[in-house]
Length: 378
Image (tube, rainbow, N blue to C red; front, top):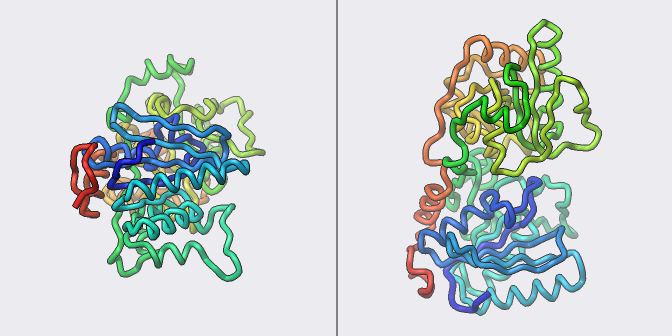
């Protein structure tokens, strides 16, 4: 990676939500810096790899983004980390953005202070609720970073209100989608792609299959409807947790699909399910699958949680009387049945494509677009 000056260094976690930000070009950790680079803001992406073993550097020709991935599992990872940190400091960035967890946040904060750069902490989840999070001898990294960041980016309004009540340093940066990928597609063609029954009635859910996302409630709801004579099948895709029983004859499990195929799986469905339970973690989140569902033009059976109601109030209002109580399989079954009987579509969310989100964020942070080989922005 070259040493010329760079306006923005984005330090992020390479593997998160069971995806690879580098190989799959996934999520905000890829799309925000990639969009900034494409829009003329000199940006570099540094990925911290907790799982891999090989260091990688590359240049994304499509958006002219330089990317480095540094594995940190082995002792040699510390030397690579220090070498990449020196590269960052020599490039004299104007802003360091850190995203993914509090440890990456601390790295970003320290390097920003050494570089005399502005520090921006990107908070897309409650990092203090992650399983690997630890406080050290009374030192709380989460609170420290929230208090020391020059600006804070939040994926949801509920998260922003909880972490920065004054709102003076907050910028809302929701999770976006690729509208060229997530759009209405032909149902029969997509079912053929996955070798699914062309005549069956499918309810689908696509995402992590953990308990707090209500997958167990969804399975129970579909089973209740089948017991009442509704010939439903359940279509699932995503990372399955250990112990989850998906062996029922009416469940079609597609595995953890590549992001590029998720829209095709969504298009197979008659109704899409968003069965989230209420929890401190999910209530503060901003799930990208909601915008994906809406963009694909299928009826949604959802629970009434802040993840939907706070982040998509107009869409939640359209579905209001159909929303189920979180954790209530019978109520969720009623919502699914209502959407099968008289489908009601909520409108897609606007301006949730990544370039629009990145442009608005750059404006809020007062970054100036320049040619890629220019120095730092004024």
